[in-house]
Image (cartoon, rainbow, N blue to C red; front, side, top):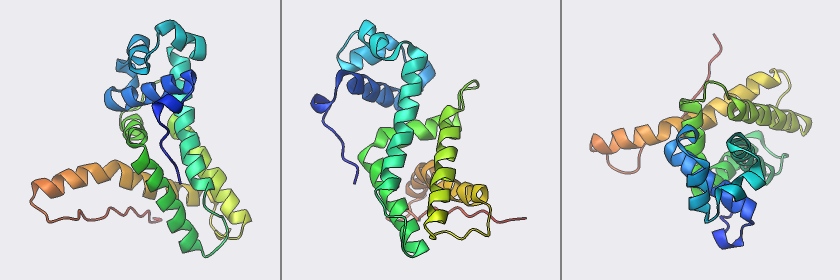
Length: 193
């Protein structure tokens, strides 16, 4: 289970990275200055550049941290067992991580829906992680090997990100239309042509 660490328990570098994540999630990385990150983290712009070198270095550190949060959530689930049970447990672990860290979901949503024209690092890293995890599940015998790993990985990422990207819009539409709680669940399925 992912736990949220109190800001006072974080190192200076981690406090800065977490502050940047929150600001990027709320406003987009392009709109956030080093000065704003420093202010949010309770530090100085010089401290930010000391730890990350530049605005681009901080942005990449936030992206990599988010990918590692997904990796940690996935790796907390054993890879062996009934395929549906393993898949459900992995999805639940990622959903817990996102619930415990709402800025992560907001950041990923913003990054994937409005990507920087010159930086697709986060999308590539999440796809690479999913392919890596798919191969691990295949080695463990949890996933069949008759479907190419990249196809399995894309199906997984589309299903997981589909819920994350579409879910908030569905929830708003459901509430505005007067739908009774709970909001219907989003399920995304890829079908071969």
